[in-house]
Structures are given as structure tokens and as C-alpha cells.
Amino acid sequence: MFTAALAAALTTPPGTAHAGTSSRPHGSRGPVITVAADGSGDHTGVQAAVDAVPEHSSERVTIRIKAGVYREPVVIPSDKPNITLVGATGDPRDVVITYDRAAGTPRPGGGTYGTSGSASVVISGDDTHARDLTFENSWKRGEHPEITSTQAVAVRTTGDRLVFHNVRFLGHQDTLYANSPDVDTPARQYYSDCYVEGDVDFVFGRGTAVFDGCEIRSLDRGSDTDNGYVTAPSTPPGQEFGFLFTRSCFTSDAPAGTVYLGRPWVPSSSPDAEPRVLVRDSWMGRHFREEGWIEMSSGHDWRRFQMREYDNFGPGALVTEDRPQMDPADAAHHTAHAYLAGDDGWDPVRDRTRRPVCTARGR
Figure 1: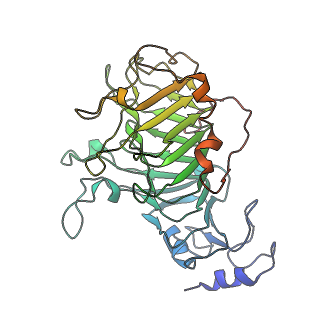
Figure 2: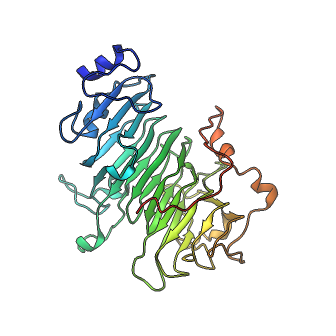
């Protein structure tokens, strides 16, 4: 069903204001739907705006979200491609989409949500874009001692050709589930100038994801020895690329030498997974351990997989036997463009020349 505002947008000449869409987001084309918690837009909730977008639309629809905290789960289904979510102010702190359930949270009808079901936001529509806003899972372990399955996803993605710019992803365990629909279907994702925080496996999944110019912040869990893991890739067998972090900053207030770069995730549903992650040309804080990587489960030694670094710098950029570096000849092929091109030549990459600048985006 079209809302009246969306129907008007589809027939209004570009640049002409209509009810609820007094200003067109910079660079947007096509219909614009405005969400405002105070009732001054077309909808008061983000999901209502998504529901108003027609299925299988070939035209991009922009959902412009005014400042506010939107406490609701949001799902962009696979039959709704070409949606852009944009914060109206340009400051991602001003627009927060949040929910607070964990894998072990009981469902109203029985059972629990599980890791996938815990997500505050699910993005399955291809060619979804998001910028200038925050996605959060606000569930806290300390407030729910009765729950032992503490995975709490802020965003789960399965769509292809996804673009996130100036977006914050907030959570603790399993913050960003960068996934794909299944092991045989590729899903490419590009994150530029984003902020991702968490403590356990907080960037994980089987998607092909590039983090370009991002801040990746490990939260201090209060331990003097163990403050978690950044990545947990589960790259499908035969998929050439997994996660790439390039020109980014890895920060933390945790004590020195208490955080692992990651661990390979070989789920029981995909026992042939070949986890892959490369961290290159990035600033590394002193919170990282000398050993860098560790296995997640017995029988899946991280050394069997492509867990690599290349040309990093900063106090945590160590080169040891347990922090293997990629060969320069191989590194020349491991670029953001190569990871994202696929069969259609997709190239969303922004400035290719910058060096990482750590600006503490999340605080």
C-alpha cells in the first residue's frame, strides 16, 4: 500500500516539497518519506516508513529520519531493495534506532530469540544505504543475570551491495552480524567512516565486508587479562574474500594486551567454512595481544585459515609469529575494490588516498 505522502512523492517534481518532506536529503533521488517521533513527519516510526515502501521497487526511496530515539525493531525485507535510511541532522548521535533483546531473551510465544532473532535491525533488501544515524542493541548483561545466552545483535545484514556511511553500531557481544542469505549467495557490504563497538566477536558472519576509514572500538569488560575478540568471520568455502579492514583505527580503553584481533567461526551449520579476515594500513591500539588470534572451538586452529595483517602501525601493530603478515604480492590484490567488485563491477569505494584518522567517532 502506498501512503498518501509516498504517492505524492512519486508524482512530485524533484526538489519540490510536499507534506512531511520539507527538505530533500543531500544527494537523494526519488521519493522521500520523513519519520519524526514528534509527529511532524509522514510516520512516527521507522518500521512504518519501511512498510510504506512498495515491494520490488526499482526506484530508490529515501527514508529521512528526524532527531530522536526510536525504540523499535526494524526489518527491511528482501523484497524491498533500494531503500536509503538517512539521519536528518547529519550527526549520527542525533538519530538512534535501538532495541534491547538478547539471544536468550524469552519469546512471548515460547522459546528464545537466538542470535539472529536478537537483532535490533535486519537488512535483507539489496542496495540498502544508510548514513548519519546510529543502530544499537541496548541489552545489558548486568541487568539480566538470569540470561546466559548474551549475544545481542544491533544489525544483521543479508542483502547485497549495502552501503553504510557515518553510521554508529553500538552493542556488546555480536554487535554487527555481517552475513549473507546462505553459503551459496554472496553479500557485499561497504562501511565507510563508521564506528563499531563491542567486546565479544562484535564483527562476525559470512558476508564480504569492507571497513574503510572506520573506528573499531573494543569495550573494556573490566578484566586485567581478557577483554574479548574483535572479529569472528565464517567465510563460506570457495568464497575468495571475507572481512577487510583498511585505513581504519582500532581503539580501546581496555588494558594493554587484553584483546584478540579475532577467532575463526566454523558453525555447525557450515562445517566447511574457511574464515578470512585481513587488517591492513590501519592504526592499532595497545589493547591488542601479541598472539593476535585464537581458536573459537577445538579442531579449528586459526592457523588453518587466512587471518592476516599488512602494513599496520601504532602501539598495537606487532609483528610476531602469531601475528602473521600478508605477502606484499598478495596484499596488492586485497583491496576494497577487489573485495566488492563481484561479477557486476560494483564500486562504492570513496576516497582511495587517505590515511586513517582516529577521531573517536563513537563518543
